[in-house]
Image (cartoon, rainbow, N blue to C red; front, side):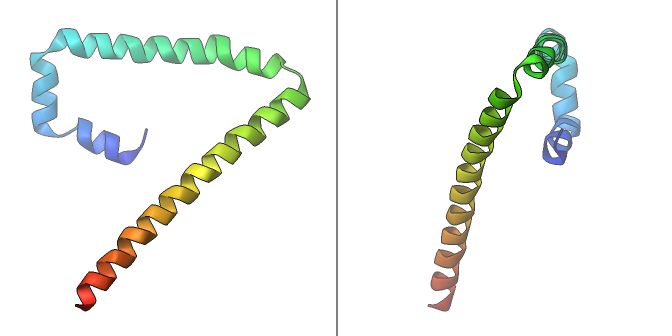
Length: 90
């Protein structure tokens, strides 16, 4: 779990909110537990049993999509940074 999520969840006002609303907190915990169970007990064994050529194709497609996302995100960050620099030069 990323640090920013943990930092968000351990804020005192967030903890008070979750202690006041136990039903929604338990529902969220059960959903996360169910997702983890499905992933560990069903999806991973199914993926491991697939043929190697399918796994190679899937990984290429997945990382290609991830690469496009990261590339576009970096371009957006650099674009915002360059706009900030141009405005600060004024």
